[in-house]
Amino acid sequence: MIFSKYPNIFYAVSTAVDGNMSFLTGDKNQALENRKKFARKNDFDENSIVSVNQIHGNKVLKVSNKDGGREIDADGMITNQKGIYLIKKLADCLSIAFYDPKNQAIGLIHAGWQGLDKDIINNVVLQMKRNFRSHSENLIVQFSPSIGPCHYGGPPQLRNTKDPKWKKYIAKDVDENYGIDLWQFAKDQLINLGVLEENIYNPKLCTFESKDYFSHRRSQKTNEPDFRFATMLGIKN
Ligand SMILES: [Zn+2]
Image (tube, rainbow, N blue to C red; front, side, top):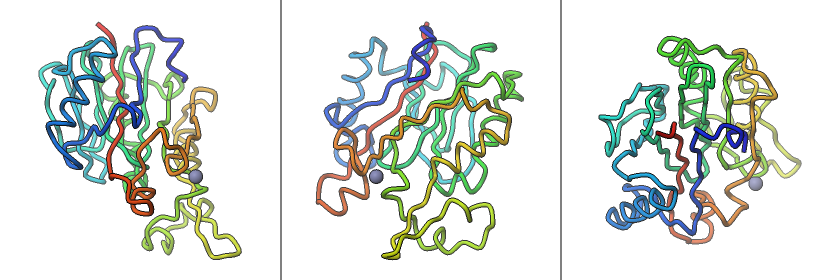
């Protein structure tokens, strides 16, 4: 975990043991309870959590302490305030956490294929530049566990896309199974924007394979509950 050398940064990924974190899948009160427990386990107040409900676009909002407890409709959030914890719920999708140690600013985005296609990475970097004077070469970037090219076949509109930017990331094996590499797509975009390769960390934990995390696609195959785990990012008080 690339943020471990920055003691003022809190970054955590909940696991299946922590339970469902989304209000939109399963029981809302249970999810609220799970978030509370997770926040307390990590020594912060659940009222300082601001949560994003993805809209599969490239919208990135600047949030502040007054947004604590809110659920906002966007695909990303940025802030330079301490004591506010950004949370993104996931089950296969990639979330990417950004930290600018020089200007003490953070960002957290949902980077599914649609957001990546609509340049959400470019947008979050741009917003951090505009709002916090961040420079790409200072950004520290952490990928969440997410479905890997080993198990991600994507929807037909992505598999059959004519957009040349996707071409080298879409592979097909001899049995006509598709493998789409969102990990490499996201990493190449970051590098093109000037983020240094050594500052990008991907644990390459495929959610479809790892029972530690919820997986939407695995749940469809196995009838496990279609729950969400969470990534959380904040600057400590
Ligand atoms: Zn896999």
